[in-house]
Image (cartoon, rainbow, N blue to C red; front, side, top):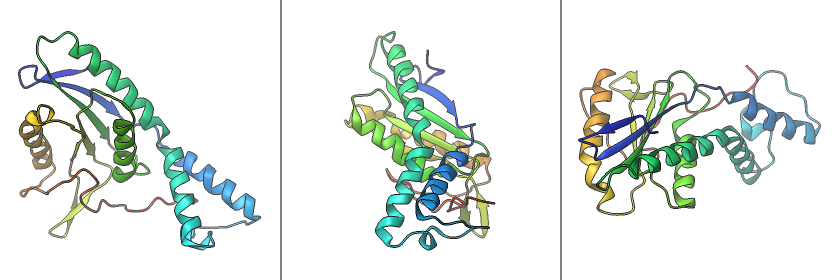
Length: 204
């Protein structure tokens, strides 16, 4: 079963938490890359220093992201099944929302998670129409301060699915206000703003 009905049962919401740190999975990819090169590094270096070209660096970073976000695919699959099950019990068409909460796992950057959610949404018919990402682990810069800001990720395909957008945007804004925001930040389907920390650091 999904966790919540919202807006007079017009929205079915499933809440998932990203609790397990995935940094070790990314580190294993880096270790394998260095082992194949016969290199040993003490301390930290940017990825550009352990690759021979921008193409190799891009491929390495993609492999790291894929490894670290494998769990997101399972989370989406489980949430999709739970939301679909709730849809079958409702007498009317509803909007499905996956709420992802990340409190302190800074290795899971919002853009990485958003991309994996988008890939899942594009791969099959599904009941997740929006993803509300509440990341306390990452912050945006506003008037010299770093504050968390929820990201509402639009995965809709029809006007009917978008009818809940205003309600969800108001929910997003209520969350933002609890973090101290006084002005709204615009969003798009992809990561709309720069979240800090920007980079994943291995070997610390």
